[in-house]
Length: 68
Image (cartoon, rainbow, N blue to C red; front, side, top):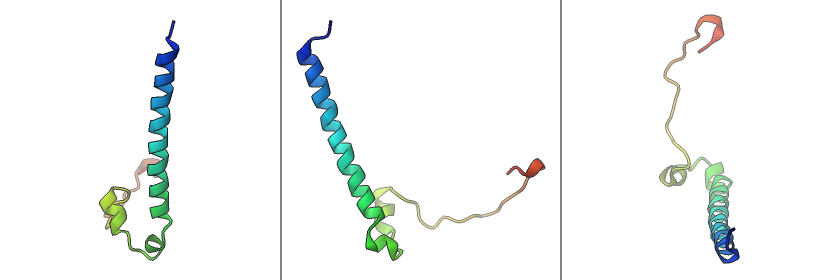
């Protein structure tokens, strides 16, 4: 049987991790919806690893049955 103290410690550890994840997600969301991003200034997002800039389509090919 599981010891109640061990179970409590496990839940407290997971709660701490969930709080950290929530804070990180909130920070990322705030950056994605900031005025700088809306104006096209995305360098900060690139530095944080949230987005990749300067990507473009080099070429496209349509295969048999319309598949690429």
